[in-house]
Image (cartoon, rainbow, N blue to C red; front, side, top):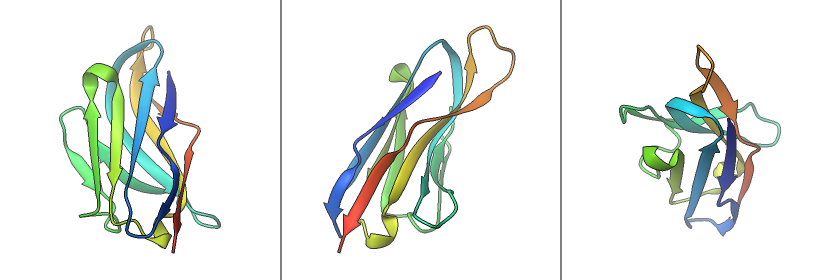
Length: 120
């Protein structure tokens, strides 16, 4: 299972960005998909998750500004980010808890990360 992120970049404070992450490979099923981020000198933190039933979770710092969604048919998860501020600057990582074909348990898979930089 491979995850590839798209959509990072440089944006001014107050602006918006949309991240996408596509899962590919021999996937039998995906449970949770989500986004983490890691700013320089800080620990990786969970940003938002969505499970196969559509249950959402957001970090308090992004509630009301970020929206996570997924397209199960395309094995894709999105993160719409609005009202961006300097503290949102980080590398954003996509992850998925997936069952690969031929395996008997779910594993966590990670993308390579995409940089989001918010300029003041």
